[in-house]
Amino acid sequence: MTQHPTTITSKLDSVGGSVVMPRSFWSAIIATTKPGITRLVTITALVGFAMSALGRGWTSSGLILALCGCAIGTFLSAAGANALNQWLERDRDARMPRTAMRPIPAGHITASAVRTAGLSLCAAGLLTLWFTVGLIPMLVSLACMLSYILAYTPLKTRTVLATLVGTIPGSLPPLIGWTSAGAASGNVLAPGGVSLFILMTIWQLPHFWAIAWLYREDYAHGGYRVLPMIDPSGQKTAAAIVLTSIALLPATLWPAWALPDLLGALYMSVAGVTGLAFLGLAFSMAKDRSRKSARRLFFASIIHLPLLLIAMVLDAFVHTFL
Image (cartoon, rainbow, N blue to C red):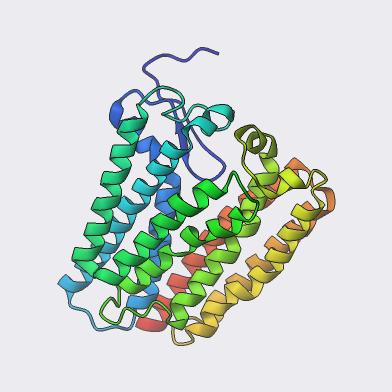
């Protein structure tokens, strides 16, 4: 089917990034930042901010500055890291049907322009965090960037263990928010922040393995080493999904144990019900290992996390103000 040349065709890819056919330089730049992932990173940082900020004494100006600095700095940093990821993976993206129409392999923008934009966005994000909320949030964001660009991205073609490394940049954003709301203390290892980090770490594993099973042929074309590449039957992949889905249950309840003054029955009820439902879908996927069950588990994962985060913030507000 032909497409009118002035029309932008877009779809959400399997990990939340946007695959587009841009009609302008700026829309191409935006597409390389994987807007879906960038938004999710920013939201998880803001959840960490909210959980750390509630109950603290704030002036209106101080709260607004810290909140905006955290949001803008995290957004720019994530956008830059995603752009650099697309710059690094441009050749492999061209081999995969799912990513072949990303801006660089599709020829909508040059690789050098994306590299420059990515570095500029990263620098702008780090400086924004540093000047508005302090050095510690900036360093957490820098660790997030470096682990994504310099560790996870090159390891994806070398070892299936890259998936475990890849959980690090996905789990650090709540700590950007956590330390942004309490930057003076710089307590990255506070129980509440650690509980959010663990929750995000474990949630990513069944989420990603469901994607990897769905798109295993694409990953093979791109030369990526994911668990289904060494597990054609899917037995190991299914077992890994079930085990991490079991581990996800206590991980979702951990924030309530770490933050008893903020979280109670509301959050624990949502965490318990959604966790058990997710586990049921994991067992279903393990039983038949079909694309349908893997797709169902993937979509359940992207519903599960927002429900948890909404319940978490809502319950914390109720405990703080009511």
